[in-house]
Amino acid sequence: MKNPENYKKFGLLRWEDGKDHSLPQDFADMLGWKELAHKVDKEYSRLSKSGNTLVLCDNYGQAGAINFYSKKGVKAVSFNADYINWFDLSKEYKNLIRIKDSSEDELEKTGAFFKHSAIADSVTSPYARGKGTIIFSFEDANIDIRKRLQDEIDKMKDQWKK
Image (cartoon, rainbow, N blue to C red; front, side, top):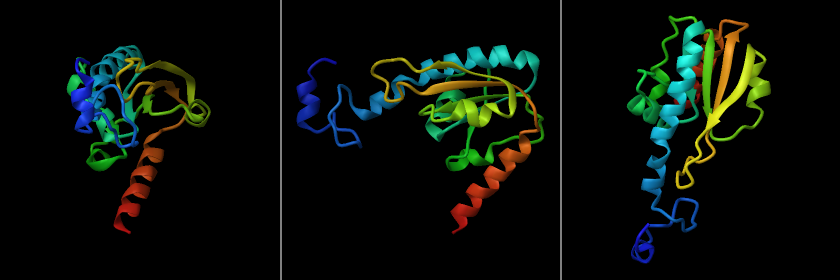
């Protein structure tokens, strides 16, 4: 970025983590969006050949980015914000693309319900705030995942009522 000192003197390089970064947070938030959508499109095209594929994101920013920038018409959902109301549980999903901020134990935890599981890709742009966001691929479900999805939706909505 040219002239970072101009941004720094106004505090525009300080993110919500309290640290100064090389770009303003608003720009960094957006930088990985096209990359994420492109990589999800690629995996979605591969998985959708063998059945319905659900794209489930950690947060509404990821879901919104995929929905806006997808060239394949992907409709991502999340348990976050109003995206919780966008799930279409009338379809039986065979495959799942899971977008996560960190790997945790996702392959073991979610992979147990599918015949094949892998890390498909990740956001690699060095300036993206979402750098390192992981795209997990789960193929050929052993169960009808709609029940687990509905349970999580109900749990989240119950928490909001309290």
